Amino acid sequence: MTLRFVDSFDHYATADIPQKYSSSANSPTISAGNGRRSTACLRFISFLATITRVLDAQSTWIVGFSFRVTTLPASDTVFLTFLDAGTNQCDLRLRADGTIRATRNGTALATSTNSISAGTTYYVETKILINNSTGTFEVRVNGSSTNWINISGQDTQNTANATANTVMLNGVIANTDMDDLYICDGAGSTNNDFLGDVRVDAYMPSGNGNSSQLTGSDGNSTDNYLLVDEASQNGDTDYVQSSTVNQKDTYAYTDMSHTPTSIFGLQINMVAKKDDSGNRSICSVTRSGGSDTDGTTQALGTTYSDYRQISETDPNTAAAWTRTNLNSAEFGVKVAA
Image (tube, rainbow, N blue to C red):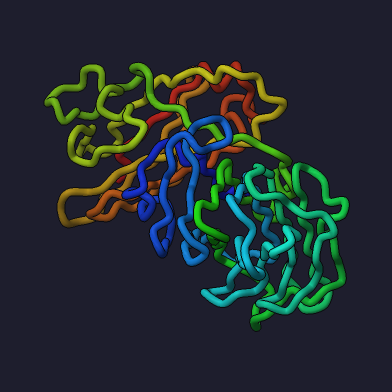
């Protein structure tokens, strides 16, 4: 699997950032109405604000997101970092003149000729190969690397390992906005390169699906989708639950209204917890073409967290998702153990 993580920033509140990210610092926020399509975005209130997503050790990472700053920084300021167990391997920095600089933990590797302007939204993508001598570092802005950064045969390795396992996004200045985030690794045969300027949309349950076996907080299993359809999850206010292994719910979802050129994949987000001692796990359920497909089993903790399942292909066709198949599919959750 090469598509590793996506975020639209449209289905949770600022208080829920710790459910989605491994860590955050200096109060980044979810800012309603300031995203690229007048939806929400991630807003950093200072250059000290960060969010971190720990993944696994890979030599190649590809990261894309929309990017807008209100003003340019007074000096080189990091906005994207690749770390090996907490130590900086390489990063991208925005400079006072709007150019972008690639560094190996502060040692300059390349600086763009082009520059960005304050108040303008750009889609920034970075692909990095970490290696002591054959490393590569490419930056594309709005789909082009011309006059941005595209270097090879570089030392992009700062630690003893030729890998990074963590992606960190950093604020540049007050009200730095990011949206439509994707993270891919370089493994596999698909989604292992730049995806281009993409949009990430959030869809919420809009109707009952084929299975309604979980019990709602209202004491029944009728119209369970109404208990999990909030754009921002509300904890114990309303929910569905079960202690019976193999029970599941699936839900219909709001249709995709636009027609994309490609659907690179989807991410099923399940906000869940267990409410007692002992082991308990869940998995996602995708219903397509009349058949249910279970996702990876994931163990639950005792506080709410966001559990994710990436699906790059339609399990019914083994091909990329289409708008038609996505709109007719159902997604849900199952008690796995």
